[in-house]
Image: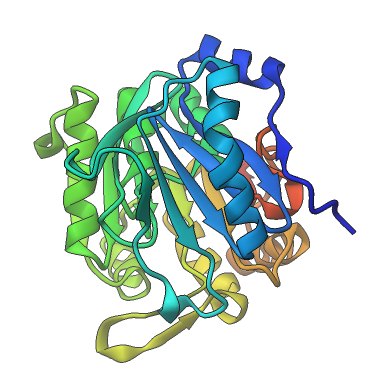
Length: 307
């Protein structure tokens, strides 16, 4: 059983973030919740009041001791049911300041919005996978369930063309803002408001192919026509539909935050898709970042096609 005492990131980890140009990361983890830094703002996500109160009492002093600038502290409760989620609330700081901010990740700039809903616009635990996309420099990337398009930004900064797909037009508009924040022209890339599960077969019929495909769906959602998507049930079929769009020696990322799935489930979905398409591939699981406990990080798996 994990200790309930909050565990702060080490000075060595903070120094590595500073050296690489990253100020979007966790600063503290506990069974009761966690705290994240987004630029000069901090977000406390709590599941029990004891952790929330510990952060109220100690986060500001810790940040000062670590030499980190802190303007505001926001809080959000981690509810048991997704429908109970709400936007963070301001605990400390100037309420007159805009709810938006900017955070950096290895020099990439991402817009953060504490009033835009439960999620603020960036998931720091996917930092390593975004770095791989930028390093690989794919010519064409398809980012499904793109949210605010952080993977698309990484692909575009590598010099390629990115197609971002999400049901939410609001999220895609935030994604366009992320492109602009990085000196990228959103008009040179594609943003498609659509149900990915319905769009993928149409893309296959048009014989579209991509060098990199990102599949990071929500645990549960309702698509067009109210059709329910459950990642535990549907990931294998989604992996198959996505793999059919992966070009020669392309790459496909499967990712989930579902608490009842693990890397073995993703490997099973990958094997199902590879067998159905009669393709060979290597698999790569990027390690979780050093600021996130492994059991709390997103489960991810790359399928690296051999043909």
